[in-house]
Length: 298
Image 1 (tube, rainbow, N blue to C red):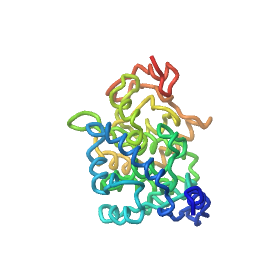
Image 2 (image 1 turned 180 degrees about the vertical axis):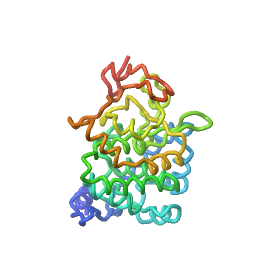
Image 3 (image 1 turned 90 degrees about the vertical axis):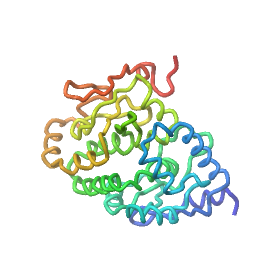
Image 4 (image 1 turned 60 degrees about the horizontal axis):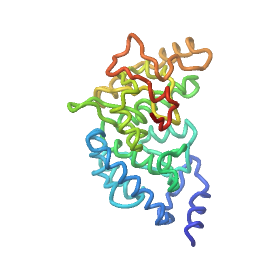
């Protein structure tokens, strides 16, 4: 079977009812493994000193830099020993209820395809590099693993609430684009940041974005950028605090308030807003967004 035929075979697999498919690790080509290695090497030039210790420790514990795309079963065996989580292959984005159910049962759904060499800087749909390199190391942290399980269970309870977009904002500003305080300054733990060399630097060092203290309701009312650097990053004190504050939030009355105050189906706050009630760690200039966004110059 040629490389092209192997890639087509993997892409044409029919998913099960829970949207899982075989990873089909044997079908990855040398070029695809090389793409993983290139991306890994690029990130490891910028993440030390910027990524949180929990993320870097997870990379080491799971040996994700050993060469090529990780084998999900072997990786999951090691991850399960640490926190009970496993990684399952899916063909791409899955429905909300399926996603929540996987998380609630400590299964992380990861795409089994990898971007093309000309997509190293950006790909719209999350691929195996984003999903595994970006997300899986944090699942080796017991407290963060508990947060992800709790998010999945909360998501299942929220189905039909009319507030899934608000719950999506919680995921976006924590799991994907979260920052954390440390004794040495702010550190990255969000998968969307750690899987991007440029945003890893931008999120911590550029004067443009806001960096605000974490607040569950504030965050869930805030719109976000899907295809560009964020205009605001929310900063947690610790993973224990993130878990405690979300677990101790009664989401039923929160959803009632959100529905009553959000009849138009829009977020209350724009991505760049800074409120009087915010804990302002850094109020950004927003120069990057003003200059047009992605890779703005000058």
